[in-house]
Length: 386
Image (tube, rainbow, N blue to C red; front, side, top):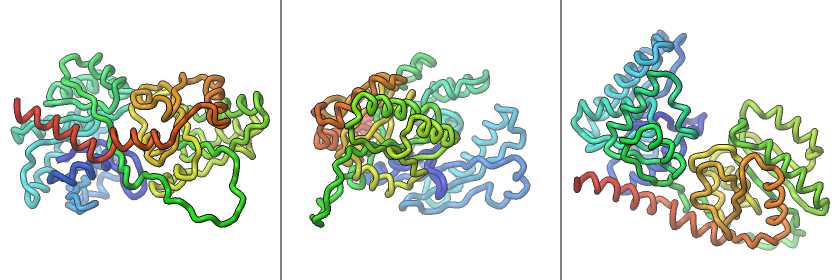
């Protein structure tokens, strides 16, 4: 049974990587999901009927989404306990028809990891914990959070980090945690190169189409990409570049202003938040994907681009440098518009020697559903042997 702090809804894609892991595991295992939704305190009296949750089939997986509304939200320990009770009730509700789980697999240390540790003790079964957060220190504000995070890490039979930098951050905080690295799973059948198009006789657009996908927040470094684009065009005015920025967030207006200030209005399109199919279509139409982030733990969208046969340029931001190397892509330092500009220029001129075919093969070999299941099954088996 998966207990998830983050899980996507019809209106939010937060935690889509957790759902992809569930889909991968469900091909071989009997999987159910508990994904509590955080409600607003002022709505507490309005939702008594749905607070306990109901069992629904989502992608064929029994799923319960209890609404958790802290009655005293500023009292962190009481809020965590309320969350744990909601998870416990949801597990019992699932147990009436689905059965008792053999193990719990939590995603994100707070609050799901801490809650799952308590429920696992109640049931007398092991608990695994996968961490995705960038950075891990986001969970460590306040004495209660640090206590709860440490308790969850120590309680987990195994802790999984989705990248090596995140593994180091977890071990630095709690040396007793038994941590291993298993990357996220990507649906490489869905994220795949587009079928060959039939010739229509139309003149092909010879520009280099660059894309980036992510929330419009400071951590994602879209401002660095815009400044790099301006530098690249100034140093080589003949570069035929156009850039698509997909995503939304609080920095949208500031980034639009920056693009105008840099004279990039005709080069850059901001297309807003896209659903999964639209992201795939964008990536398939792209010559180069750029991840200019200041901090990541993995970067699912980078691997999705690679799976679509697109070479990539990424920053050394804590995640993608684990798997990006020439000729699949280039790695540059974060917060360095000049270095990123030079890399984009090389790629656009065709002098970087990048290969979308190699990028695709890496994605399939290392991050497909089957690769993820092999790694996760091996981890589960070590516990059975122990």
